[in-house]
Image (tube, rainbow, N blue to C red; front, top):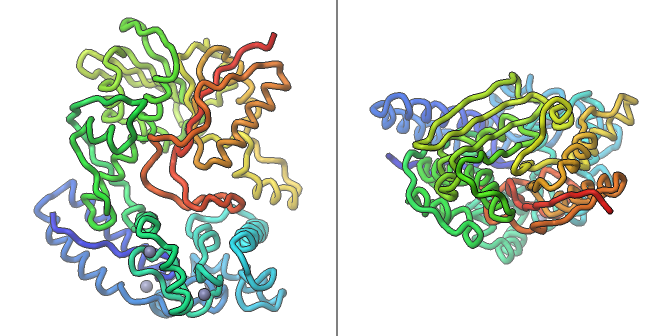
Length: 471
Ligand SMILES: [Zn+2]
Ligand SMILES: [Zn+2]
Ligand SMILES: [Zn+2]
Ligand SMILES: [Zn+2]
């Protein structure tokens, strides 16, 4: 396949250009799967389009002073979509007599203050718009274009390598390059690549070797299993990126494998291993495709029957699918229910409960709660509270959960402990919160503005607990 360096999407790029690029890449991929002959031609078109769009985004919206464009025509084209947020920020600057929304509380002097202003702006926008922010609005406010050294918003240039950090002057460029290691640069390049907008997993058919799950990590286990070595620079071409993202998608199943090594379960081939995946969403299902199940069977040849019960209110229809893998069977059940609803109607007897990135304490809802308070609405009816009690009442069943950051991992554990204490339940940790060697390898900006861990990964931390009645 012809190799094209993708452009990097970033806070200093034209929004319209970056989203156009994403669209073009999508077309290339669709054509990739349909007609291989067309591919070379499409890639050539893409290269031409990208060259045209590689102009610096010199036009800054005069309403909000934040959104950037390559040209006035792209500014006009984006007007309808950008207008509502822009108007709120314009009014805010007028009332506060400031010339940039980030100056809401005066000049920004450190990262904590920056994070504070960001969360205030998000709150203001949420209240005034009367709706949650869209992903692009989140990104504009949450990852604003500022000098990484002095937090100035003026005359910015970004790092050539990653387009993920910016600086205001040659002097500050030098300061940034002193601490912006090549590893950081690569991480930010991987966050900024427009490949991230694509849904590009490769369907792997052949599996080879298992590995000692307890001592290994995602990239090694994936290489043993598939004979594929992922690239160190996956943002440089589409094929490398696809394999990298595919490897990352094994994080869910490999975390489950690791959890299974931490517990004692009856190793009887006739008995089904039953896993409840609680709080499941459509994104959770991506972790459990056929190739992922093949990976699990490779690591655990003694498992002959696997039952996966997906529970989540947004799962749509109730249903089940039976699959056969050589001499093995998999039953997938889908329940559009919360765990507490499920446990009222069904007999609960799993081998393991798996919860991928819950938010028991609702830190993600703090802003939403504040908004509701201001608007005097009812609190959001998300009910981990109820659910959590039903979950920890499954005495003796290992409960395994992952968290995106250490802060989240600790607050989730606190939530479990609180509810356990109130209900006279004992919590034993089978596997302490620890860096998960099977976390995803695609980095993310931490969506929590109050958490100082800036870069996080899916399934970053893993914890396994066992509960029992307190005597
Ligand atoms: Zn543009
Ligand atoms: Zn604007
Ligand atoms: Zn500066
Ligand atoms: Zn860089």
